[in-house]
Length: 390
Image 1 (cartoon, rainbow, N blue to C red):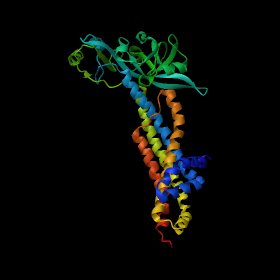
Image 2 (cartoon, rainbow, N blue to C red):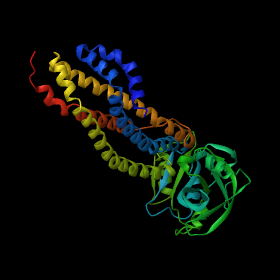
Image 3 (cartoon, helix red, strand yellow):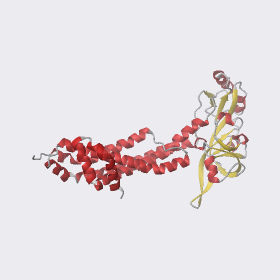
Image 4 (cartoon, helix red, strand yellow):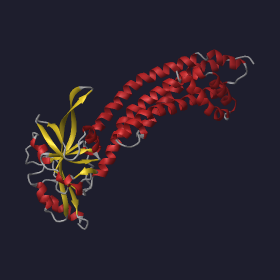
């Protein structure tokens, strides 16, 4: 319905630049302005495939990009200690006693289930979480506290991401009921809320609470220990001391960023790319067929232009410029259409602008350009090669 209007508006903007390309450009501008319905029919499928691919790819990429940024902001530690088979019992205490260590926090990944209602039906939502030792937590991690006190995190308590706290209507002093991986439920008292929940997940629990409900022994070190060194400490000397304090453990001089929900979102993004590739392939075939039918229907028009004296070079330039105008308009309008849901999604979930990796954006543009060229030019090559009397 809107295709012809979009085409008319586009030609008001592109008509003057097209005329700068000589006779072929003037023919392209005149044809596009006179055949808005035909141009609109060519633009519409390009708009649809651009908007579809943009929304599907940018949604997951925006979460991953924001999660990576938060993961870097969250980390305050200088070093990390971990072992393949888990850290031995008492490793955190021994690490804290090493000279030059200002704070040490053990961080253990896990999952919980949250009961909620979706469209009136109850369901359980699986959420990635971290269990941490609270002593010196804010020296090794910066969750971006909004209210409450993260130092009060103990067994039986929980810190909640700000967005999740708003959706649940809880604040410090409220209680939240979570189901752990072993099926047991626990009512936990909220002691703090924090902003950077994309990287850390929606809940921060006590390490002991999380390990108590997993298959791992509560005394074993299942995660890694983040270490913040004193400002005047020799990091190399501290690294060597940590290796001696915890035999068999590895000490990372540059800890990897903390990733919770962002890591799972990265997997979802891979699945999204595969889905877009499959559905986009069928959509590209439909776009190619539409453009080829439009181009085939223009053969009588091109024969008439040849009889009127237009040269083959002029008509080739006209067709290329028309295809370029179609592609530019389709991409711009498609990006505008995609930006409406993407802005609403990104501002609500991450508070940032939508993000699309440059490589994926380049693939979308390349596919659209190749499809438009293949659908618009080859069907009329035979008409242009024919001989016509002057």
